[in-house]
Every structure is written in C-alpha cells, then in structure tokens.
Image (cartoon, rainbow, N blue to C red; front, side, top):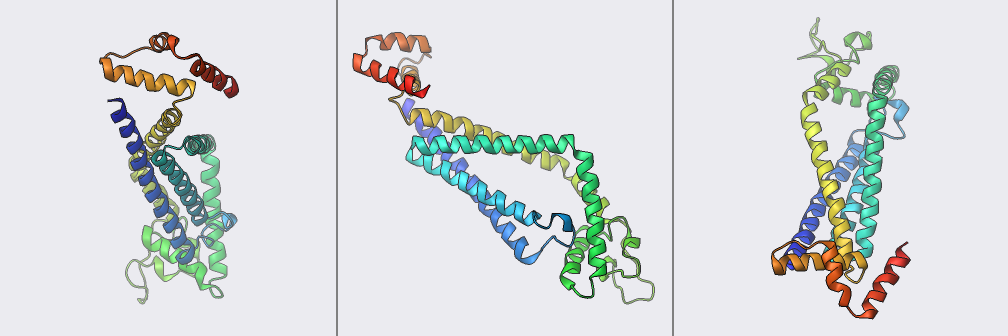
Length: 274
C-alpha cells in the first residue's frame, strides 16, 4: 500500500504539471499571436513597453518552465529538481499574493489611471489616424468586439468618427453609432464574468498549493536516507503493514535498535541541514 501511495502521489503530480505545461504553452502562443496580430500600444501608450502581450509572453514562459521542471522532477524522482520546483513555485505564489494585495489596496488608483491612459490612447489614435492606420486598427477591433464607441461615448472621436462605431452601415447620411463607451463595456464585461474569474483563480490556487505540498513530500521521499524522509517512509510502511497509523514517536522507538552507522548518518544529515 505504501508503494501504491507513492506512485499515486508521483503520477498525480506528473499529470497536474503536464496540464499546467499545456496551459503555459497556450498562454505563450496567445501572447505571440497578440504580439504579431494585435498590438495594444494604441489603446494604452503609457504602458507600451509592458503591454498585455508581453505580460502573456512572460507568464507563459514562467508557467511552462516551472511546470516542466516539476514534471521532470516527479517523473525522475530527482530530489534536486523537486526542491528547485518547490522554491520556484513558492516564489511564484509570493508574487501572485503581492500582486493581489496591490490590486486590492490600489484598486481605485489603478482604475483611474487605466481610464486616463485609455483616453490618451484614443487622442493619439485620432491625431495620427491619417499617417498610421495600425493605431486605428486596434481601436476598430476593440470597438467591434465590445460593441462600443470611444472611451465614454461617440463624442470622444469628435468629427473623426471611425466606421467601427457604426451599428450597421456608415454610408447613410445619418449613421447610427454605438452609444456605450468602451470603458463601460470593459467594466460590464468584468462584472458579468466576475464569478467565472473568481472560480478560475481559486482553482489555480488549489492546484498550486497541491503541487506545493506534493513537491515537498516527493522531495523528502526521494531521499529516504535522510532523517525526515526515513520517518515518512517508515510511517507509511507501518500503516500499510498493520493497518493502524503509527506515530512519529513509535517509529523512532522502533528504530532505536537500528545499526549505529545508520543513526550516525541521520544525525550527520540533520546537522548539515542546519
């Protein structure tokens, strides 16, 4: 039974990391697609260096590398790889926690700055629309996807209203424009999908915590000669042989008659770890 638990833990971690690897590749591919086909510099020029595409690229690379490291470490039962994965996942969780706290504390400031930057992006696109059609193409795509016009309404475009603001056709003498602004559409979309986003974040957190715990246990069990690893292995062995859970004290008492050299090795390992 102990071997079965170890194999179950190993393959569960392999499958979870493989799924994370696939998600990382998908995020990376989507980031590359946005970089090539859809640049966001027209919408938010102040963050042109760190666009949504760049965020997706960085996230995809990090997720892919960390997941591959965890998959390889679990498959090969390599303690060094598992500990590296453990530390990287711990750092990733700290970064996510810091980002979540920052969003909660400075939510209003970030929201106001995003709206101002969106207005500046519209002004830049409007003033350079005759010289640079690429800037306008981004706005045309967003206004078509969100069924909106301008930041607040159609008046943001003044006399240079793009065709993407029209509901049906702009060839008529009195075209009908979309009434809702893109900023309101973005907030409405977020409110409508808030539950889905929240559930997705919770699922991601559960997966990360599970991988965090699994990598820690696997790293210990991958080194049964260590003091803690030996206790875990013997605990699982006693549970499987007797059907009754043995405590750490029982294991230590049972192992009191172990060869002197093995106890000496444990003490040396414990000493070097501190």
